[in-house]
Image 1: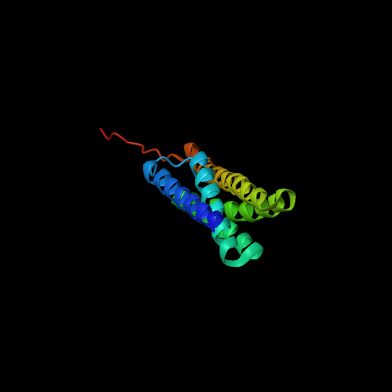
Image 2: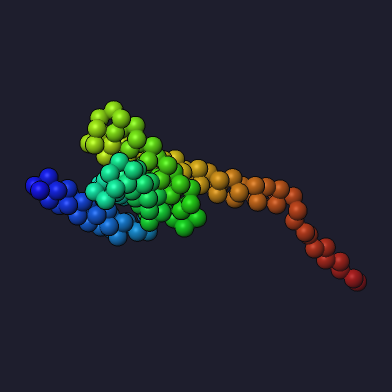
Length: 153
C-alpha cells in the first residue's frame, strides 16, 4: 500500500512538473523542451499503464505518454514527427530498460527513449522545413521581371 501511495505522489509531481514546464515556455519551441516533456509524459504513461494493465499496459502507456508529451510541447509544424519519435522511443526504451533493469529500468528506459526519439523527430521536422524553404527560394533571383520604360520624344 505504501509503495502504491509513493507512485501516485510521484506521478502527480511529474504531471505538475511537465505541465508547468509547458506553460512556462509555451512560445519557446526547442528540441530540449520537447525531449523533456516527452520523457516526463512517457514515464507518467508507463507508470499509469503498469498500474492498469501490467507489462503490456506499461508499454502502451509509455508510447502514448511519450507521443502526447512531444506533441504538446512541439510546434504545430513539427508535431507529427516529434510525436512519432516520442512514442516509438518511449516504448522501445521501456522494453530495453525493463529487460535490463526490471521495473525501474523500464521507467528510466522509457524516459530516455522518449526524449531521444522526440528530439530526433523534432530535428527531422525542422530539417525538412528548412529544405522546403531553401528549395522554394532556389532560382528566384534569376526570374526577375524587369520593366523597360521607353521614353518617347
